[in-house]
Every structure is written in C-alpha cells, then in structure tokens.
Image (tube, rainbow, N blue to C red; front, side, top):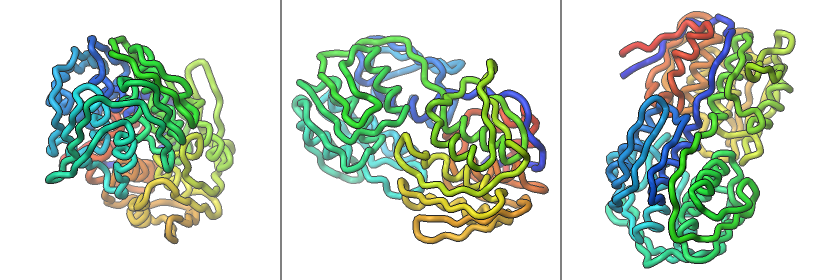
Length: 417
C-alpha cells in the first residue's frame, strides 16, 4: 500500500494543467451502453475509478482501449450483470442501471460501494425508473430490474440528486415518448453528460436548469467527445496556492463552474486573475481570514470542496463555520487535521474552525477521496513531515497529484508502506 510523504512549508509557484473531470467522465462512459456506433472520448483522466469503469464496461460487453487520455469504444454486445467485485469499489457503478434497462430491458447490478461518507441510497434512481415501467427486486445484494420497454414519464425528484438525474436522463433517451425530469441536478457534469448524448442524437432540452425535457429516440449513434476539465481538481490546486502562500496558474481551468468557490475564497483573502496562460490564484496580501460555508447543490458551494477549504480555514485568522448539508458523515478528516494541530469542534452537521498560527506534520490516515486531498493540502503547509496513508482513495480522483505538485515546488513523494 502506498503513502505520500510531504515536507511542508514551501510556497507553490508555477503552472498546473487541470485534467479531465472524473465526475463527468464516469456517467459519460456508462452512457456508451446506449450507443450503436463506435465512440471516442478525449481528455479522460488516468484514474483508478476510470479503469474500474472500463473493466466493468468490458464485463457488460462494451470493450474499450484506453491510452494517453483517450478512450476508444466499439459498439456493445451487452450482458446485464454488473458484479459485486467491481461495483463494491465505486458508487458510480449504479449508473449502468438505467442504460442497461433502456437497451436490454433487464439489469442485475450489485448494490454500490465507494467512499464511506454516508448511505447515499439509490431509491431515487429506482423510483424514477419504476415510473418509466421498470420492476425491481433485491436479491442477495443485487438490484434486479426488468421491463418490456421503458416509457417516458414525469419524474419529480425529492431533491436534486446528481446520480439519479444522470441515470434517468440516460434511460429517457431511448424510452418511448417524452420524459420530464423535475427538480433535476444542475451540476456541470450533468450538463456535460447531456451535451454528449445530444452529440450522439438524443433530444434533450433544459439541461442545466431544474426541469429537463427528453424526447425518446429509437437509437443513438457515436461521436468524438472531449470530457470537461475537473472543477474539483482545479479547486484543490487553488486552495494549494492559498494554503502555501504561493502563486499558481491553472491551465484548462473551468472558472465559470467555480463561481461559488472563488467568491468564498476571495472573501478569505485570495486573489484571482484570468491571464492568457490560465487562471492565476494567490493570496491578496499574505493573510487569510475566516469565513462561513454551507454546502449546497450547484450552483452553491460544492460538498466535494468542503474538506479542502476546511484545511485552508485552519490557518485563517479568526473563526469559520462549515455546515455540511449534502452528504452525511463527511467530517472524518477533522480528527486527522486535529492531529496536525488544527482547532476544530464538531456540532451536528457543522464544524467550527478556529485558525492557528501553524500546522505541524504528523502521520495521518485518509478516510475518503476529498478527505485525502485536505490532508495533502494541510501537509503542504505544515512544519515538518506529514505522511498521508491510504492514498488509494486519492488515486480514485486525482491524476498524478504528487507529480503535479512536485512540478510546482512541493517536496512530496510516493512511498511504499
């Protein structure tokens, strides 16, 4: 098992190229189940979750070649079963459910796994597909779905679920008739999925708004499609500039999709400037101020940046309050930051962070993907040596993060435990 060893205290300076978005690539890859023609995806990040998805797609009958951030897929000869051995490692695997039902009329998908950050049940996926005519049973840990032919339906989500919106959006593309998805998720990754499907011949309108209209078609073709850049990776490197008092230029940065984050970091004392090379990020005058954050669905503050910004708050003057309203049990990084000298108190779904003058390097253990990133950020700013263990979580969502950080001055290396 690998770990990262970080010698902190070095301001990061230079340019970083932002990779393709994991959270956009995964549903788009699963959408290939719907297609009847070859397809090429570019700007695909080289990540553990991507490799897991491609293994699962191969088992489902959709083989692919993956080289130099390009995935080439041939038309699928489908099988309905997504086995537990792969699905248990990645929650996004449930996104094959809607496409399989739309193409085959049946699916046998293991209950999903992934990061241990709360239950995040799939009931909204299932209830929406039931309205489209699917029937489900739970048998030995598998979701078994069947239908003769999915029918268009008016589906109102209880809350704007990203995965549920993606699953129902894909299913609706090949359903008979029209579908309306109300209270749909507005995340940029959902919009990227819709744009890809439109390129393949789907009839979708309203994506990016709360009501999405889909008119079913008989088949979808192929295309060549670039995956959008990763706004969470970009946000993580922006925080890296702030927490080390450095200056980074982010190339291929999705600035518009980061508005809520940039507004909050500006209030904390960071400065941003669009240049011809990319987005420049640095502190405004050398000091950081506390701020209050409440995670919300897009376009609000992203839950996937909560842990990273909390690491920054640990070194800000005054107090900050972080309220997590999206995902339960997403404060597991708090006790590890406390090992490094952070002053954080938990109260229900909120964390009160009091800034300290210095973080101290320590052995810490990652509990999930974004918690891993927060501990790396804290280690970059800390005095002394930080060892981040269980970085297999980190490898699920960040492409060559230690290589990118080392290129802008970080003293960081990967080491076998």
